[in-house]
Length: 374
Length: 225
Ligand SMILES: Nc1ncnc2c1ncn2[C@@H]1O[C@H](COP(=O)(O)OP(=O)(O)OP(=O)(O)O)[C@@H](O)[C@H]1O
Ligand SMILES: [Mg+2]
Image (cartoon, rainbow over all chains, first blue to last red; front, top):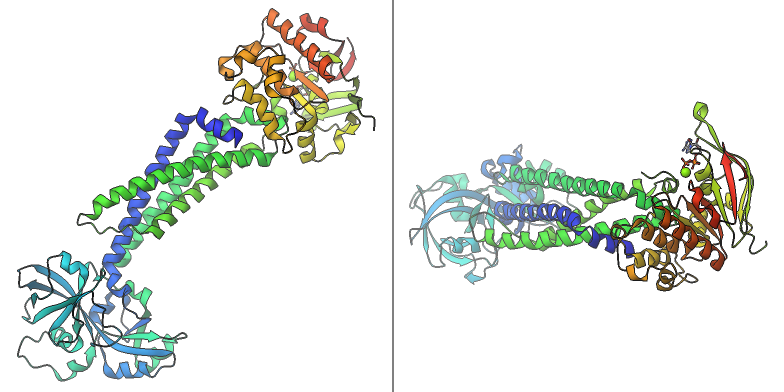
């Protein structure tokens, strides 16, 4: 500590320069983390909030089109209800529509068809719970888009009319579109494209997109699929069915991984150059009897101070910038656990980079302190 | 074990390099330096003078023979023990001072105390700095000191831990005549006052008058000079 802190002060400009690079990386990491949290929220928060263990789609359904292509019926639901480990199961409908409100606000909605009173029926923070045949409960974010409780919503082309009877407390979106919960019977008419007064096809009233399954513990998805003739995915897997979700998140993860690698290399390279500069000094210290562990500890303290300060500053700036972004149309969410994880990861990787540099050079032969100088 | 016998080298042989490039840097060297005695080692370049300091200072282990300081056999120690022994009992003064750039003159001395975990038994840094006449430069860093001033701080630093053995490698190489005399006089005085056994390697025949004894090293062999 004695030496580490004095050297920090002595070479403060060099350390500030390196610290600024690390701080900028930290800003970028925070912004990317906010962007990916925002995208995740926008893409799948509607699915995340459903108290569901797994979704069972029609047999042979591919994951990327599961919610738009699959059709299941009540028989498959009944099969699932009989499976051991299943606490409850219900039909779930999912349909993306364009609509227009009575205030003439155009809005895209992800219509989640659920049985009123089932475990999928959402809690409301404002207005009434799902129940009225033509009443829908919308995501909080739909209110931000200009919808109000009490508004009438007309679905484009089909002409079906719904009344907004309630709103949820939190964001519930699916594929960047606000979720509207609708009673399953009304959803089935929408799904068939039946306008007001049109008759429903016989089988349509037994259909939905998937069976939503709530399990107690051990649930054998394969056995259930075999019995019900379905293909099921657990909730997390099913996120991949949200439009664009997989591509967006994997792109961001790739960029983040690169940033982490770059920051470890930057810190490692800096400490290599810095420690090589100190080579003669370290040899003298070793000749004076300083233990190798003392030099290593000293160097790591230095690295920790620089990393802690610069990454801390970077996070503060990143969160500040994030606040500005959040007001815009960009999906962005600062989540403390994600940001802290990123910060800790940066510190740990930086320390690893510094340690590699210091260990190699702390092993300098103290003999080089004697005789001809270099 | 006798308490204060200073440095004893007997039959020390060191070979450096390997295969074709093997050099016998020290060849059956015998040397005794008593506490309070300043012994100069002179000799041509490549004769093995630095190697002699390295063996005496527990930096190199001899291939044959023994090196003892106050009766402690340096060759019998592990790497870690040798580092601790250097820290606690041996002082080094290097060619151009070799001070730590980030530290002030006073902090150079305080660092010695920092390096040892028990921190007791060392000398008072401020007093020691006064002893070498550097009180007025206590707050300066090495790049703000002259060569002679750096050497004084280097000597004070080497004496901080009350060493039994002081090893000095060409302390006047970077100094003019007057400064050289000052520095070696200081070494001679501190050697007497602190009762430390001192070995000084030098090329500078002007300063030999301050030494108790002069030995000459040629081709790894030591003879009275
Ligand atoms: N690491 C090494 N490997 C092989 N040979 C070495 C090594 N270090 C020193 N030598 C050789 O050992 C001999 C003694 O070297 P040493 O450094 O002790 O000489 P010196 O008397 O201190 O010379 P100078 O006055 O130039 O400092 C020289 O011939 C040198 O070339
Ligand atoms: Mg030499």
